[in-house]
Length: 116
Image 1 (cartoon, rainbow, N blue to C red):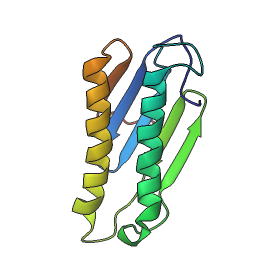
Image 2: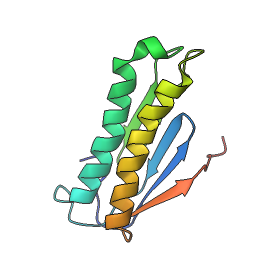
Image 3: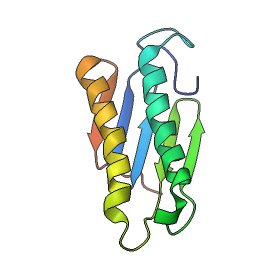
Image 4: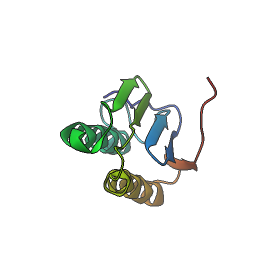
């Protein structure tokens, strides 16, 4: 699994049309970490939902991932912002449930942007 190692916490930041996940949840050993697996599934499901709804977007969504990180972002087409925002809201709700159940392993960090 690509977001799994047992040495830290996963931090997820949400902006209007982007999500960044960083770190490893530390809730289990690599390959056996249900918290890590849940975060991974939520982020990848969001990316797939965006790809499946390309008619709502101006261009292809950006989805990049690596060991311990993932980024998803997009630009909605005019008039489609609310529909796309709902997709991000579902992912955020899932992460919020994980944070409530596993506060030592998952943390939502609001509106954090990485400097280029």
